Length: 335
Ligand code: CP
Image (cartoon, rainbow, N blue to C red):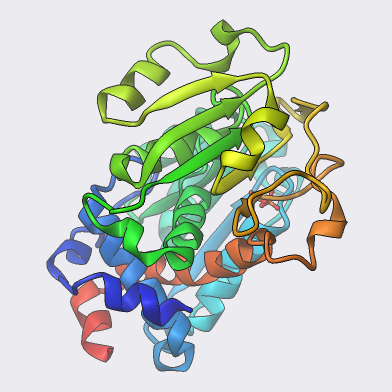
């Protein structure tokens, strides 16, 4: 329940004020304390969403999704609606001037005129930066190619901390063992999650990257693993999922990676189902959409935290958006 997380994090409003008018591009641009305060606000909102029904009244979100999305677009739009704001949606770039060769900076200039905040998804990694350079209103990266998906990682961390609130402490008594089935160099959700976890390096005694024939050289980008380890994340690799599975507390699985205007699947041989040899209290996270790697027979087991992860994303996004667009101290005063 979110109230347990509320009790675990001491309130400090100073941190959230820094988010006002900030662009959110990468998962590690916030420090650990700001992230904790954001989760505290998300837990407050989740505990009583009706108290937060009007902070964005009269404000307009431009929801620009040039790549398909179910959860990210709908949960951002749900978050904005729940905060009392209005939305303009672009769900297909072919309906905009981009299809006629208009440049992103001119589109961004129009965003300045028509809205108060932009959420952008594009399979092109650079679009977010080109758009941001011409914006005078804040923008959130909702997934840029293979690069980052910061608010997905925030939702992942929020799910983990709701499951075990004591993990937010600087040195938790019982750190968890996390398994990641995915390719950190090719999956933006995995890249962003590892960055977020590296802000809380003591929450996990070990992060095991479970991979198949992909060579170690392809698993991480240049300096990616070194940077995570420098921050204190303890990373190991294995190709033997069966051996490691019974030792894991959290299993993060993802098989889809958007590349260009299509997607690839990685780690096809790794599949989780209700008959997998999981610890009885282990939880499974998946950013979704799922493929064959995650059997639906897990949906009605206690291992299913992926639906809670997707649900919690609305409250994390409500907390973030309201601090970016409204003055955070006014939001905090509501509580
Ligand atoms: N988790 C996620 O990014 O899902 P969508 O692609 O449906 O937005």
